[in-house]
Image 1 (cartoon, one colour):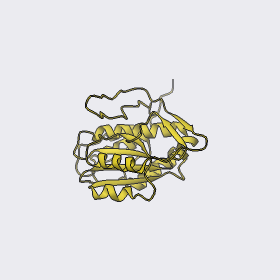
Image 2 (cartoon, rainbow, N blue to C red):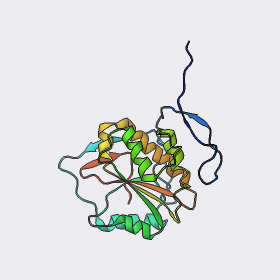
Image 3 (tube, rainbow, N blue to C red):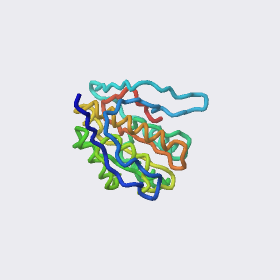
Image 4 (tube, rainbow, N blue to C red):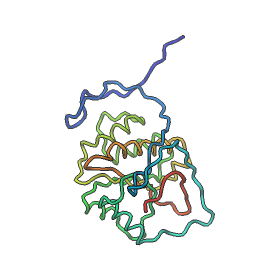
Length: 219
């Protein structure tokens, strides 16, 4: 039987900022979505349940009514104040509400992902590389994306990280497998930062008339 070749991501001996050494070569592989906890421990009496990734996208005929502006703003304020634990959420920002400014004023570093032209793995990873300003060793694969999102030593923050993903439906409809994997990577990154001084939250920003089962609303 012919040997199997592995094509990996070659990285320098150390990460940016002198962190622990990286593996020199990491074989790329197909990620199997594990759907690790997206719903954090929200009231103390409630525990999160880990389950397999079972996400469906449903388009509601005629659209859905807009969310309550007061509730949406309160949810963001609760998150920024630490009253809501980090996670991956759906969230519909109120019209004319500058949520980026609100988060930055609270000391949170914000990254906005504009997915209007993203319909596949390559364009998604390219978008992430540009928005997060990944180092040169970023290898354009899912494992490298997770490594970078759990590092971010080149992008320090005082209070934490907030990622807002706009127009995610473009990727979800065009390449649902890549979309599922992308959200799984976000969930892994959120879990990695959970107990740090700079927790991470990912918001899938509202798509009118779209319901994404398996990802909770931030409320």
